[in-house]
Every structure is written in structure tokens, then in C-alpha cells.
Length: 238
Image 1 (cartoon, rainbow, N blue to C red):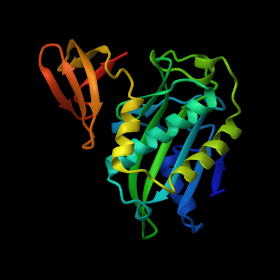
Image 2 (cartoon, rainbow, N blue to C red):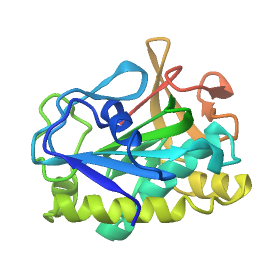
Image 3 (cartoon, rainbow, N blue to C red):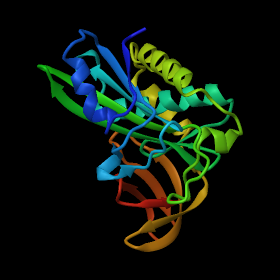
């Protein structure tokens, strides 16, 4: 299995993965911890983390191994994590555009993908925070964990090892752009359902139609018709 390192505690696995890339010659290097103190999410958001209850995982993958666009790589990574959790929990897991993972209407995984040049090599740095055993989410009403959503206790260490093995295996052969888009949209959260959105501080109903290859989300809005949005331009309320 490709290298997977463990830290008893760290600030952010996305930040600290670079230390491990200096010593190992591998296309895939993983790092995980069950005690991340300064996790980061998309666009500067923070990721709340309870020690020994959740999993912070980062995979560094050499960009030169992939020919797809950044958007496609992001979509495919979300698909892989969705598929892994669907198999693990035997549940219908969804992807909330662009790359949050939803189980029974609660966010259980947040993903942050960055590009970095480390030791003369360019990498995708795939970071994901998995809520696994946490039971209370007082600050985030739409968050949950594998435990709260399934009632089952999963091993942190076994989940990390299985996840690393699954993702690295699947990244060796990325499907076509058309296949990625089809799979992503097949599992898109709230697709073809009437939902409530916040746009320019105003709420209105709309229906998610699909995500596209440019990284946009197409929504049929009640007042404005079909429009496309980038991340953070519109908010799905759930």
C-alpha cells in the first residue's frame, strides 16, 4: 500500500504533509491524525475537530500523473470519497456541490484540495475531514457524523487505512470527463428537488439542475430562471 503516515497530533495535515514528501519517493503520500488543532476548510473556513473522534486525512498526489482539469480532479475526488462512504455505511451518500459529503441530510466530510510545489514536484494536496464518532455539533446545525447518521461505531484507524488504500487505487486510472460528470451529477445533493437558496441576502426557491465541467452549478430559480453560479455566489439552505 502507498505510504500512509500518522501523527498523534498536528495543526493541519494539509500543511504538515510537506514534511513527509522530503523523504519518500512516491507518487502518493498520505498523512492522517485523530487530533487536528487548526483544520482549514474551503475559502479560509475553519474545520471544528474533536480529538480522537474524527479523522483528518491528506493525500499528496503528483500532478504530473493526471491529464484531467483541476475541476475534474476535484469532482472525481469527491466521487471517490462518496463511493467509499457509501460502501462503508451501506447508505445513499450524496455530494453537496462542489465537494461536501452528505449523509442523511448532514455534512459528514469537508474536502479542501490545494496545489503546491514541494521539493521541485507539483502536487495536488487532497485534505478531508471525516466526522466519525462525534455525537454533538452545537456550533454547526447541519453537521453530523457516521455515528449520528448510522448509529454505528467505526474504527478510526481502520477507516483511515481503508480510505487510503481505496483512494490511491482509484486515482491510478481516472475515467473520462464525461463519465466523471455523469457520476458526479448522479449523486448531486438536492438535484431536481425544490430547495431554498440564499442569493444576495434574499431567500428564494430553486431547483438544482446539474453541475458542469467549468465548475459551475446550474439552478432554475423561481424568480430569475436558469442561472449558473460559482462556489460562494449562492448558498443552499439545508
